[in-house]
Image (cartoon, rainbow, N blue to C red; front, side, top):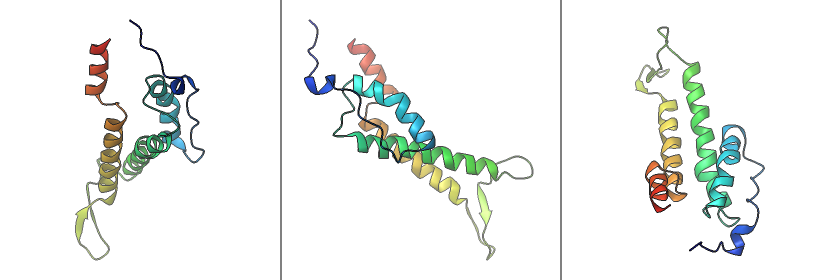
Length: 125
């Protein structure tokens, strides 16, 4: 027996927030229609998806690019750096990258984008 799609979900995919840029915008454009079709993205939660998933992904990619711009002479990432007062600390870009990735992963869980979620959905079908 085929499930009836609620009328709210028959509406078109929610509009992408205009402030999403770069990789976050690309992520929205690729995944928003799929999530909307599955009933996971609505006009009520579009900003949560934009901030928790798309924007976090864009920030993660930006931090990744910055890390790749600041390589050592050997072509390795600078995992630790020396401050102007000669202290050795973890590279702040590593910390930011990890923070953005953690937020992205939490958002993915909320919107059913983890491998486990996708696997469960395949089993249901």
